[in-house]
Amino acid sequence: MELLFASGVGVLTAVGVYLCLRARTFPVVLGLSFLSYAVNLFLFASGRLVVARPPIVGPAAPGYTDPLPQALVLTAIVISFGMTALVVVLALRGFLEAGTDHVDGREPDREGRS
Amino acid sequence: MSHAIVAPVVLPALVAAFVVMAARFDLVLQRTLSIAGTLTLLGLALHLFLLAGDGVPRPYLLGAWPAPFGIVLVLDRLTATMLVLAQVLAIAVLLYAVGGWDRQGRHFHALFQFQLMGVNGAFLTGDIFNLFVFFEVLLIASYGLFLHGAGAARLVAGFKYVTVNLVASTLFLFAVGTIYAVTGTLNMADLAVKSAQLGPEQSGLLRTGVALLLLVFSVKAALVPLHLWLPGTYGVACAPVAALFAIMTKVGAYAILRVHLLVFGGDDLPTAGLAEPWLVPAAIATLLLGTLGLLAARTVQRLAAFSVIASMGTLLLALAMPGPAATAATLYYLLHSTVAAAALFLLADLLAERRGAVRDGIVAAPGFPQLDLLAGGFLLGAVATTGLPPLSGFLGKVWILEVVRAHPAWPWLWTALLVTSLLGLLAFARAGSLLFWKPAALPAPVDPQPQARPVLPLVATGGLLALPVLLALFAGPIGRALEASAAQLHDRRGYVEAVLGPGRSAAMVER
Figure 1 (tube, helix red, strand yellow):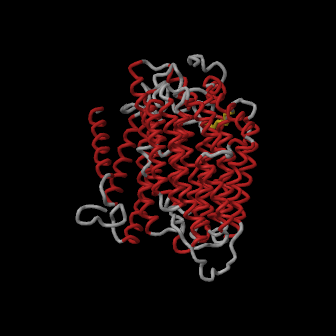
Figure 2 (cartoon, one colour):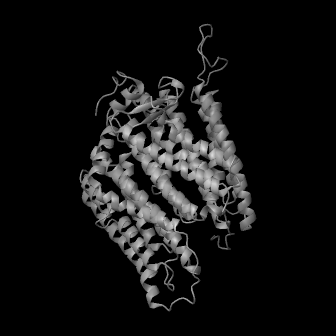
Figure 3 (cartoon, chains in turn cyan, orange):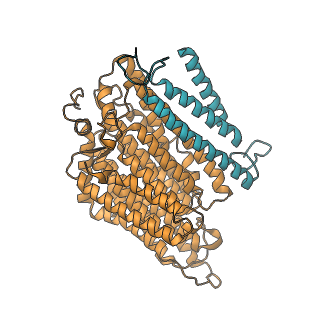
């Protein structure tokens, strides 16, 4: 399970970084989303991967899973969700005002200079 | 437990909410509330400064949960100093904005108060995850403020600013996750204790997490090569917003001080000496690049933006030196560079408003109203920024030169500091002579329309420009207060005992 989880986080991060480095706003927005998914999973795993255990210490329970990372993930999800909405609006407004979705606000010329 | 400690976070949140809900369409009421709120905050900050003067860090336990389990705010001398600085800057910026800028778009005052809430919270928090949360609060408000009075250029720059900061926030979360996975805590005092008890097999992971944190704070502090977002942002934002943002790079420097000195700076920790070898060369690069930017700047606002980068280089160089004396010098330069940079941003806008089509471009243009007054202001700002005597920039730089002597490569560091000061001086002299001396040789403008100029922006800018003078005049008492702050920051055991309770620092080895 650890291998699967870690590879998932790694692939999501790699995709996110690649997309963030693109020159158009939409791939950048997608990249930021992928990065936030990756970090949410990463935070979740920082309390160790435990299956079928309650998030509280009880005398009857055979063990417990750390509840704090779950609270951290909730906070991070809310923030990243709000920020994604903001970035989408910003990208759209930029596209409408500048007439291009290039991150520099103007199309590069033939030689690729922007 | 004094409830005044939490007030700098709660009050602006309430004022902002009230402004959005109740005073949405009434600009006069918005201004009144915003100014009254910020003045109250200044009073509170001064009260907290006096409260922290007895030298005991005061924890504020939210919900009265005991320290490592609940959320905790901590007031010590450094926090109180930063709070006073932020509030003084906020008042000047607010007065400037009330002179007309707050009419350019909606919700300026609400966003302004939220920004103050984030800044104050970041200074007060004693918990790394809450540091993240308050960073997000101040960033989200700053996105709104940055787009204030929008336009295509600002939207394009805004997208980059938001993207860079979102990536930095993601890195912050990775760092927090790594540190939590190793230590099982995020409370700063508890981290200082738990890090000392780690086995060698876990110290590598902890070092990774702490290095990631340093990276995040370096983005905020605009350390080369993570500075690329700054000139585009500060050079395009509207003047009062850019002036307010002068405190944001300092939040990054504060976070480095707090986390890397207080929490992870102990000699006994696996993280000891992690930051310094990186900070010194990066700070020198920042200083050089900022100074070259000063020489290349074509508008006064960009000049101010690059002066922020150059001053962050100087600041972080002092920060990387060991010992409380270096920390005190860092703090003095921090106070000075914040107000000097903010004053320059406001001056740039005053010039742009009066010079017609050339705006604040550094080119010769016909004379403009209030030339003498602005020339005097620019002279003060330039003298303060470049570090000429007799203002606080000079005192700060001399103090930094003195503490840099502790470094083995000090002749090189001195050379870098002094040569960049000279180059900065050249840049400001060139700008000043083009802006203020060339107009005398050009024909007078054709019938400059006499219009009523609001007096409030001039007062705000003048007030900010007076601060380097005051910092220099009262350098003795201020320096002693900062030395006490620095000594307190280096007393890691005292901080831990104050937050967690007596006897909890037994696992730490005193440096």
